[in-house]
Each structure stands twice: as C-alpha cells, then as structure tokens.
Image (cartoon, rainbow, N blue to C red; front, side, top):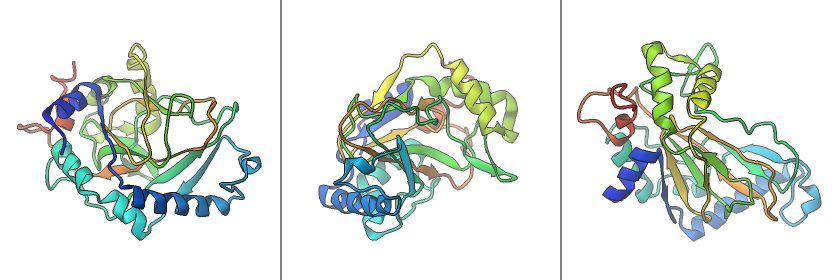
Length: 255
C-alpha cells in the first residue's frame, strides 16, 4: 500500500515507484521467458555479438509467470489508491510490449517526448482530457536500470501541462500524435528525471506524464522493461471526491 507521502509525490510529480513489487522467483521466470522470446529474433542472452539492434520489441508473454507479476497485491492496492476502486480492469497479467534496449550508440528512432494514447478511433490512437480507457502507465523493470542503461526519461509535473492542452478538445479528444506534440511543447521547460531502479520495481505513472526513451545506451547489459497501460472501464468522471490521478486532470486544478 502506498503511504500518504507517496501518494502526494505522485500527485505532484506524476509518478511513484513501487520498489520490489515483483518477487525474485517470479522475476527470474519472467526474465527467462523474455530471453526465450528474444531467441526467436536471433538474440541470445549469452552472446553479445547478437545484440545488433539498439532496441528489439517483443509482445509481453501471456503466461503464469507474467500473470503473477501483474497481479501482485501491492500493485493492485496502489492502482486502487491512485485510480479508485472498481474503475480499472484487473487484468491477469502484465500485457503490452517489452522494448529491450541493448548497449548501442545508435539512435533507436523512438526517443521522442510523448504521452500515451488511450483509445482507438478508426484504428488510430486518441486521447482526451478524461483519459478515456487508460488509468495509468506502469513501467515494469525486468532488469536493473541505471543512468547508463537507457532509462526512461520523465518530466515531473508534466501531467498538469498535458491536462491543460487536452482540455479544450473536450470529450472528443485528439489524435495521439497531436496530443503528444502539444504536451511535449507545453512541458519543455520542466526538468528531466530518470526512471531508474532494480529488477522487480514498478514505476507507476500518471497517464498524462510526458516521457521519452533515452539513448545512447552506454551500459554493459540490456535494459528490459514492460510498459503496459492500466485500463479503465470508462473514463475518469472528474466528480468530487477526486482520485489522485484526477487531481491533475480537472482544468481548474491543472496549474
């Protein structure tokens, strides 16, 4: 369970780390399955000569190990605290994709500042100011991540900037590329922090947090991270009492 100080930090900065959320035995099984999937791309754990690309993406496995990783009580309690009980889909698993970033000086081509899309319109991702269908972004660290190993960059407080640029579009919202561009521009003066931690940590982010991949990867080991969304059943109602996620989204509060 998150402490009040941790909830306050999330409200102010747009993210909070749940340290040691995935137990070591579950973590090892997940890591083995990730490397097995990478093997299908010709990438082997014990042979750095096969680490040719700066990033290789795989679909997150749907297995018992990942079901255990994604349903840890400490995470579900945190989601309840931040989103509100009964509002989100209690998925049995992690989901999403796993970008594995390898030591490389090459531009991976995906390191632009952005927020997450949340719902589909005609096959394209859109987002609106009530974050329809998306409650949170969760960064599951399946490897140790330090400053040298291409950590995710975040802009603390940028979720408020994103809320302001989304509000004029109302419930209809706007296409994800446009929302990402406006949120990145609005938050450009914010400081940058690095989402670092140990294997098993989960960094829980506001759906509007402006973030980006980083490069080059100057470390020695691959950085492995899943990045699923936590799905909402509908959209945030923005009716008092507001959840910690909603506090930054109400236009009069996004200051």
